[in-house]
Length: 384
Ligand SMILES: NC(=O)c1ccc[n+]([C@@H]2O[C@H](COP(=O)([O-])OP(=O)(O)OC[C@H]3O[C@@H](n4cnc5c(N)ncnc54)[C@H](O)[C@@H]3O)[C@@H](O)[C@H]2O)c1
Image 1 (cartoon, rainbow, N blue to C red):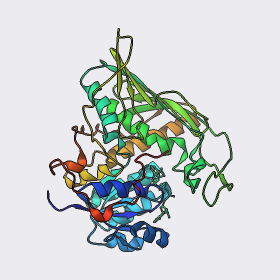
Image 2: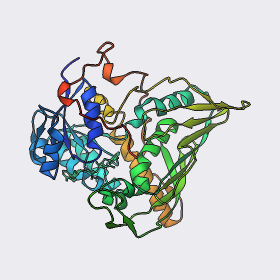
Image 3: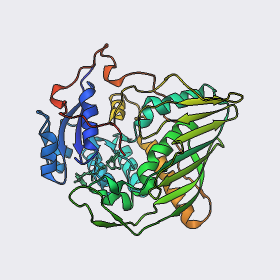
């Protein structure tokens, strides 16, 4: 193995702990420093990890030791931090969505192209065994020609558990831009890019009440649609029906199903790395679980970073993330216009992931952990 990839985190909020845990398990990646608008938050994040520095945001972005800026800020700040990092000659890996608007996301990709640096973007969950095993089943012809998919995410909203949920109800948030990246990335990974969308959307309440933390009971404004539904027409001709909602109490619907001429697949939650893939072939009475056949095992958020060690565009990459954002924006535009909208962008399906454990890649059987990054109480690898 060559030199590890050196990373600096900007944004030390709720999701940062999951990245710290993953980076601690990946011998190929070394965390150098963390930064936040709130310096005390950065200090508190760095404190358990001797060797990791808490820096100012500008200081971290300028730090010559850092190759990749891991942008874990809120969606409204994604483009600003990415552009500053690119201007400093750094590669960037961003939490989703790539930017709050596709216009901002385009500026990020253009700046990166001019600067000769690379852009990666969450979700990397689709590199796990769940979506990858389903994709392999489709590519191997187990369901015949894919014709349709359903993707359903319905919850009462993140304000129940997130202590600062404002961004979920502001531009760049809402159920579609917040959770849609997982579902649309998984659908594009399995069925290819989307050419046209037809949408409808609603907004149930003008305010939401924070349910936990120091601001519990505080009301926040809702300025985005909170129930978004529609159809994605893939370039292949397959039709995906999408329902993304912060307005539902509960659902029993599978997260994703893919239907082909010869069979149907139940695909696990794209917000998780793994989970059972179920296949029912035409003529069979019951579904059977497919053996895991592709994807990263025991993966966590941040595993997409390891593609920066090669020369390729990261599989959890800017072009895919831009297309996903463009699809979601087009769906909202369609909902507001009351007609179908053509999606301007396209992308390649990202390269498949061979079944492998990223923490042991090229390392033999036992992962080399970074003792200084061992977290006292590792958080789970999924978000609610
Ligand atoms: N919370 C989750 O479960 C979860 C799961 C998956 C993905 N995400 C994504 O991760 C990102 C962050 O979410 P979060 O829940 O951690 O949010 P958060 O509000 O808890 O944390 C964001 C942090 O970024 C900092 N920040 C904001 N603007 C900044 C700027 N300009 N410069 C430096 N720091 C800045 C804030 O001070 C805060 O500490 C979002 O894009 C979100 O969609 C969150």
